[in-house]
Length: 59
Ligand SMILES: [Zn+2]
Image (cartoon, rainbow, N blue to C red; front, side):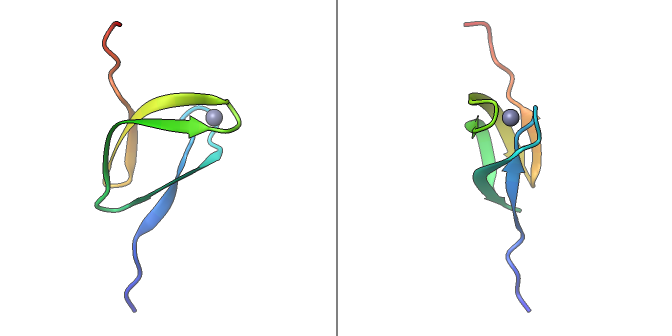
């Protein structure tokens, strides 16, 4: 049975499930992930279902 490998991204700070879903081959770079609990956006990278904070250069 073919099953798409996907999962919901969780907030990197409070671990709440967000409304953003990724597949195993999804690549996000500097993606503004919005957390409804924190009411904040976090810039993240996601590669192969692994999430890290994006490096934010000094503005
Ligand atoms: Zn959060």
